[in-house]
Image 1: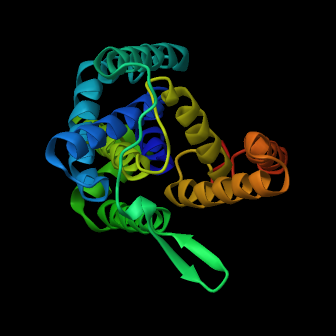
Image 2 (image 1 turned 180 degrees about the vertical axis):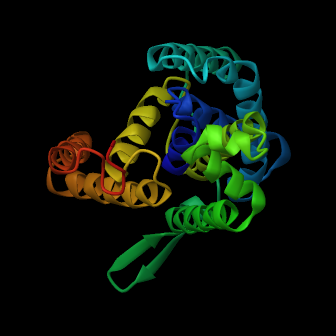
Length: 268
């Protein structure tokens, strides 16, 4: 989830406030695939990723490209509008009731002596690590990935050497949306969701990427681990309802000592 958000910001400097609502649509696509085709979400996440890639491509081509050089407040208002459209479309299509996708893996556990491991969460974590590694290989080992990094570093320089910056931007936004689509499908058996869930997911995403450093792929991955561990410990030692207090306290501490985040670059 956070990797997709930081990729979009790192390349285009666009703050995607619709990120959480895109993830909710990834969850609902997994729900439809499970109910209509009997497809397990741990397999169907590929289809969710492809569907969200198409959605991200359409949003970028039709809307974001028009304001990519506009002030940040215009970008924020646009993406908030997209978030509202996605949330209300999900509300009309699926209703307000919470849903959860059924999967045999989500109900399975592995016992290691007195400790048990949730198989569904373990598979989700493993797939997330694999997808992050594949994205890293794509960005650093392919020509298109190098073009994306070049456009992120210096769009005008990339344009001068013949890079189609519009195509690069559309691809980066689509890949970021595909990441969150896959994330939505992978956690759909673990977390109940409804159309309004997008806001909390967006807040969690921004918490993670700010801690890790906006625009840093490694920072998003490490930030995700830190936030998840912090919230888990908070739920154990405080109360489940106070787990977010721990993660946001971590955010404040990191911003006090490293305003750019753990792996972010300071502005010159």
